[in-house]
Amino acid sequence: MREERFRGTSPRVFSTNPHTPEDGRTFVWAWTEWFERIEGESGAVTFSPIDTRTEEEFNYWLSQQGDYDLSTIEDRQFGRDVLDEFLEQPNLFPEGFRQFEEQPLREFTTDEE
Image (cartoon, rainbow, N blue to C red; front, side, top):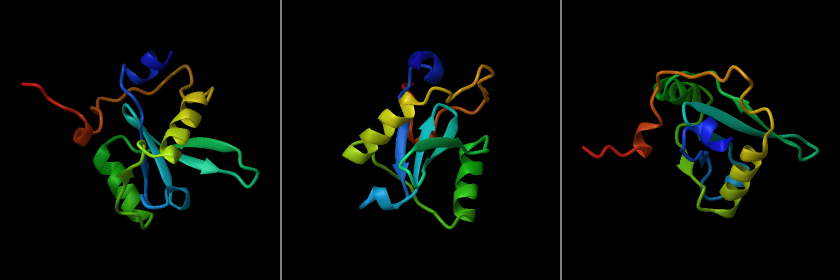
């Protein structure tokens, strides 16, 4: 199922506060879609899709929120925990999973030409 959802790629985890990611906003990039991690007062976690179709739209949206920089955190324990939470979400992609023409996040792809 994971292979089908992410076309063989691994989701990436980012934070607006790389030094103490628990205090920043946390985002997951999964193939062609961004999700924001939302933690409720009870500790329940959900991932809300961000309604942007391109990397440029996401960067603009993020800057409008007052956040300008994201750092990858999947090499830290909090980032690994977020990735596990993300992968455990049962209804991440409903039946009609949106597929866009957008390629995976450019800075994290390699072209072997």
